[in-house]
Length: 326
Image 1 (spheres, rainbow, N blue to C red):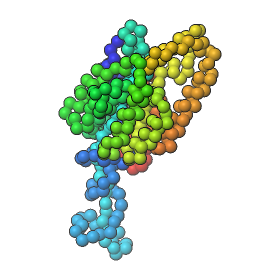
Image 2: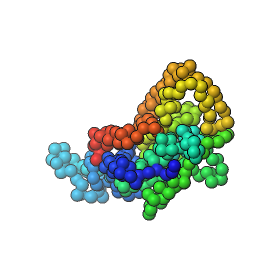
Image 3: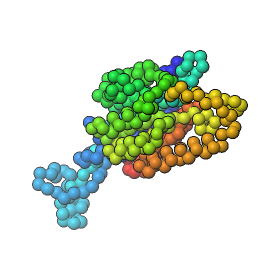
């Protein structure tokens, strides 16, 4: 089974068209290199009214507010908030845990696998952003701390011509590979987020697509730093229902995709305690992200992601309009 994200069937094309219609808007103020559709912290004389300020010699008299002068007899200038493009920073998790569940025939995740769904969501997000005139960078966390992964940014925002095709081609080649990981490799998502935080990036939208199956405290700290740097933050947490609900029966052996560890158990004996711990962990993730003003959505890899993603985009669009954006 191909591990490439499929958008060429009618369902995939319909999903992409609806996503493009809703758009992927930044809710925080962002910075771009040219005029676009997103709110910018820079003030000028275009698009959306921002504030009045006192007139100073040298100001363009065309921007004087004569109605305000008639009321106050003071010369004031009307400033407007410029609209700008932004850069979408996609942080894609393809570490070994994202290979679950594996396809027994080829050892790769199928269309219900977390890795596949994460790549699909990355492609849709990138194509939607590019359809808006925004730029996309792709950052890859795959557990390989070798020379090829010294820089986790595998598609920089400077790529413009053919950027959508380049994104699709890269995602076609990427696969999460089960294997024995060192402790450093197990925290590869944290390493990549550290690179995002350390770079002098313009304020934009950071989209993290991951199962978040790393130590949560370091990840949470880095995500807070992403927000502290002024980026809008959206986290799509991709998990399989089996990981959440443990629906198995009988005697089951679990193989750790990130190590050689194997555990045999009877799921019905531990299911209640397991599902309680998972629910508490998910509640903490949601609360921590909500606390820093980030958006979070749980995407079940074995379910159609369309409704979850489109509902999220519609909600973000509604909030943007409510705040005065378009």
